[in-house]
Amino acid sequence: MAVKELDEFRVGRGLMETREPDFERPLWRRRGFDGAVSLDDMDNALSEFLSEARRKAGLTREQLAELLGISGQVYGRYERAESKLNVTRLVHLCEILGFEPIEMIYAAAPHLFGSKPQEAKSRLNLMRLMARMRPEAVESLLLLVSELSGDPSPD
Image (cartoon, rainbow, N blue to C red; front, side):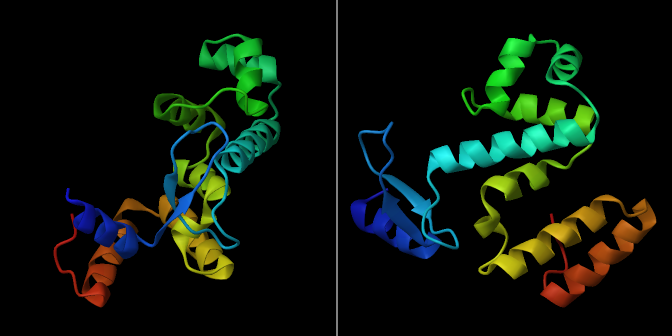
C-alpha cells in the first residue's frame, strides 16, 4: 500500500497516532470516548472483567484454573494483567464462565460499539438479548434488520 493510500486508510478509519511505553514505533488507534485508551488500560479492563466473571460464577482462581487445565499461578497472571489472553483461551473462558466474547471486548474497548457511551451500551445490550433469542426469532429478526439496513443479503 502506497504512503498516500495508507494515509487515506488511516483517515477513513479515524485512526490517530499514539505512543505506548513498550513499543518503539507509533501505533495507530481509533479514538475512544476520552482519547485513545492505552493498551495497558485495556489489559487492566480485561483482567477486571475476567475476575468479576469468575466471582459471579462462584469459582475461586484455583477452581477455574483446574477447569482450564492450567495452574492457579498461570491463571492468576490473567487476572493481574501480567499475561495476555489469546483468542483460544477467551473462547474457553466463555464456555466455562458463560459470557459472550463481545462482552469482554466491550469491557476493554466500548468505543468500538458506538460513537457515544450510551449508544455503545445500547448496542451491547442488544447483542446480549440477541444471544439469548430463540433460533426462529433470530431468523425473523435477521430478515427485518436486513430489510431496514437496505442490505437484503447479509453474510
